[in-house]
Image (cartoon, rainbow, N blue to C red; front, side, top):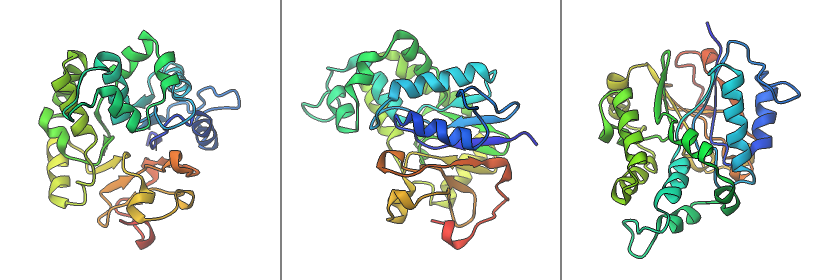
Length: 265
């Protein structure tokens, strides 16, 4: 079976990401791809809140090229925030007298990242898929079924979200941000049934909602993913921006429904 790894929200902590990938054997001491035929997915939110969002983007872009496309990344809500600022930063959102730039800054936007962003960065971020299938796994950034507003298949959702990002229309971007910021919907088994029934796969992995927040624990104590009671939903948001040490999860080694009470929501 092909090794399949996933890493949660990085939020500009480039050097922590390098350490995690090195420990997992996916990069070498020179920070070059060493994962051979392994597949790596970042679940989005490479940027905002942390010290080096641009460096994080550049690292993941390079690993994508060096791995022949085996290193991949989803679109997170913070990438969408940043792209909305580039497109219509001074336009008003649905909140009275609040611009897209205001909302981005309130959610951890980092001005030095915005100032260093190039056209190549923008194009790469805008081309990230919002959701993906990898074998038996459905990969989402946010733990929500709100993606269904854009379609009933993986391709339709990705096409719809790419269209919203590319439209430059404040209303479309405002709706997109609302959808990508939604959370905590996957505790409902019927919602999970619907997502897997439409998009395929037998299990879901996501980031977006810090495990520390779900469990009410210090992020420094979070060292492994969080499983739903039935084992079908796996949360990998290690809360790096809150001081969590981080972890990389090898999904092909996650036993089917192998859950212990300490690791369930």
